[in-house]
Length: 450
Image 1 (cartoon, one colour):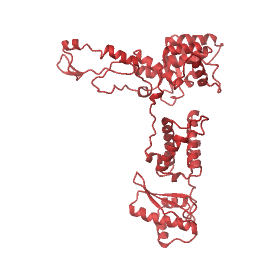
Image 2 (spheres, helix red, strand yellow):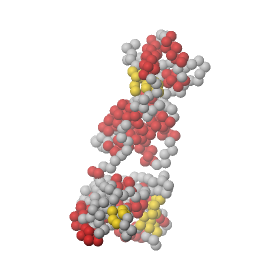
Image 3 (cartoon, helix red, strand yellow):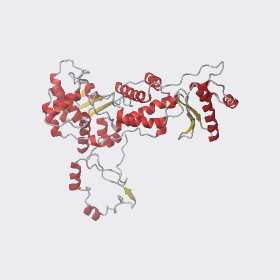
Image 4 (tube, helix red, strand yellow):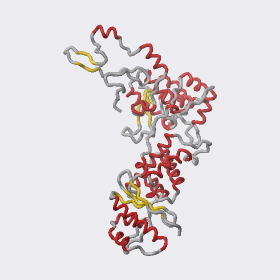
């Protein structure tokens, strides 16, 4: 047998300790000790090393190791048994086989109640990434925080190889973060099931939250949209484009779920059903105005629809209807170049138009179907028109009149009342695309309730 690598002690960030040992079969075992002293960890390391050595040559263990085994609690003893370093106690039930990457991820996906097909597909991608890197038989409890860090580096460079036929295989940072977050959920479930003691993703401190990629933000001008509408092949395609750009619907999910019964022409409102937010308290149902720009395109489709039609969009509901590819063709036919995020940029452009038109941000967020926080992080943009308006209007305050009337009080934002007390003006003034005039709150814009 080859020489055995000496057991080492690993100190977890949480203060817990583990013993790592490589046995004669070439496999590495991790025995988690929990919160113990350095002395206990050192003694355990020596005993585990001896057990690994004796496992290879079949000799009996020393009296000291036998005594140490006899004093172990059931938890540590069971971990040694799962690692196949000691035999089960006579008469005891056999210890369950240690979970592997393949077995646990299979169990996680099977037992988790996933309603959305898209969510299922993303989790399955993360499973493939974990299995491809760690191998199917890798013990779950042997994966360390360092292992997860190396997995993430591999994921960014190679993780997309099996999921696309494109030459470019490097994943975007936001995608890597999202998949790391799902891996964190998978390991957290294993902790709750007592398969592992700690979550290696949590211990690694890797970022799991996604940010906004400002490089992919793009405000689609209205004059472009009218050119594209003229290049659209039929009334239904024109309605799809109009619903995205003039009402901010998600495509394809919300556009294809829109029914004729959802349109209230008498009140000029429409009810939108969102798959993305149906787990929220409102069930993913919101009411949005039927804006004037949208009316002619919906009327055209309605006139052509057969009697008894249920859905507004009928022709492009099949699974093989690739709306994105068809939309790229339409854009090029109009003599324009496709923008980064075809349908999402239309939705964001609609929201920015509504903000610029002076609608209250809370109302706009309700119509579009997300919170103000999401809107400010991922949707609102400051365009050239905001700078132009700022240069011509300034702060919108007549300083001379304010000074003569005695209502201005330096730079504090405070003014006197008839009773002589001081009040703070707290009403923000909308001055552009999601930009508010600065009041007494400070540099940050006021936060509205979601």
